[in-house]
Length: 212
Image 1: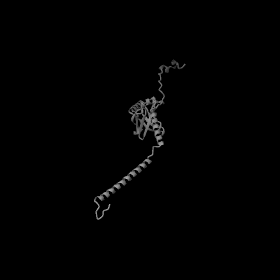
Image 2 (image 1 turned 90 degrees about the vertical axis):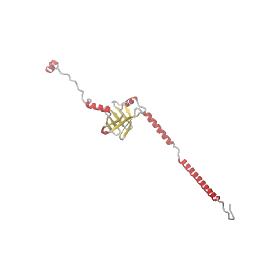
Image 3 (image 1 turned 30 degrees about the horizontal axis):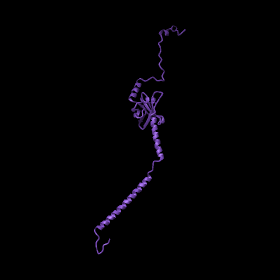
Image 4 (image 1 turned 180 degrees about the horizontal axis):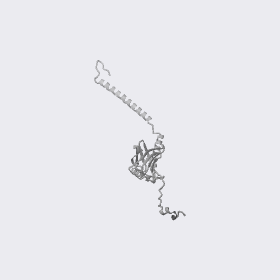
């Protein structure tokens, strides 16, 4: 629209033009933002890969192994469970200031966690011909041997004794009694009771019939 003869444009015209410019700029920004958002979403959908078949198989195998371990831990014989009832538990002091902690697994009867400084083993009872209480971690080669007067922890793989002279209060009492009244050694001959020789036999061998 043009105005001639020196007529001035209405006062509202600059404001209208400014509003149109702002609206156009906002429209351009809105379109640009939508395009950028769509491009980002498209790129994200390409980079997000579905779980591969190999990973699915590995996860399934791990679950099966865990189930197998739980099933194996439940398969203890009655004799092994009977041995487990006699195992001394708690924080047991050993020689040289060491400690061994024996904990029974309440969720898996017959299984024990034996730990100390820089070691921890998962052990189960083993039937022994000597009658000693024996726990083993076959994978680690560790053995916990409980006697009446002490316990000890050994490692067959390294050929070392990891803890020795470990005593509960009951074992300490037995050890003290053994010191006061030591049992007879198996290497010493049994004492033979000598019957008294009659005095007459010594004075007169003919009377006893020893000499004919």
